[in-house]
Length: 106
Image (cartoon, rainbow, N blue to C red):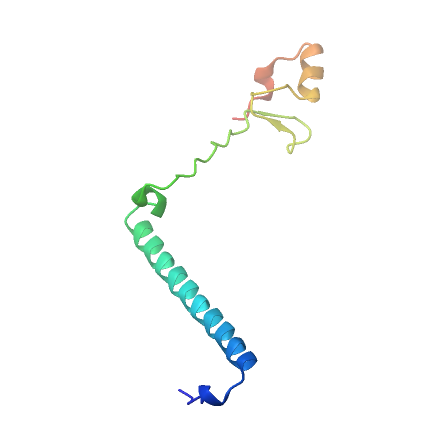
């Protein structure tokens, strides 16, 4: 570590040094905290848990993704889960006398 003669420094230089030292200390603490958090998260995941589950923190709930049940016969990218508003292509087909079962994804 470099030897600094604090007695020979001006007040402005001392304040600048103090500000820089405080930043360095805060940065060090942040790095250590992030490393500890990452290690704890890794250990929790290895045991089949999330860190929030173990610490009693809020657990993120994920929405279940609904799988498509019906598919447009000509454009396979147009699908419908069977929930919510019916797509226009299915409404049109039903009006023409077709049944929903014809569009079921096997």
